[in-house]
Image (tube, rainbow, N blue to C red; front, side):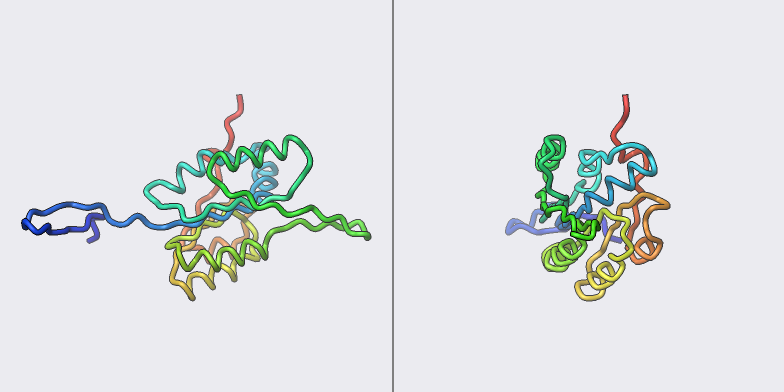
Length: 181
């Protein structure tokens, strides 16, 4: 049984107890996905501070990226500043309005590329998204790198195939929401 303690002898043959190496974690947050799913399910916002506190406990953070859409809106810019204050590296992509009226602004490819690169240095990849397209990414990281992948998502708004692929699924419930009042 792993007690979490490594035993080490000094030159004097005295036993010293050293904590086990902290697991290295890379955190990847699909900001648009978590915003819309928490808003739709709970009419509330995601508490990034509480999430950070939970997900980093006893872990060494090697990267923490929050993928968002750039905006000139002062509230959005303030939100990005808050994310940086929590500890995230905020990755911004422009919102694209096409000539036909359709819109594009997702980060799926960017998140996938970063996850693959970070899997080489992290023990655990934490993905905050309910997007089922990430199932293939989760499986690739597990199979190629042997990493654990944890997924955080809103229940009933997270794709079942993503939940099934994850080593651990943590539902975003009231504990991860901004408290009202």
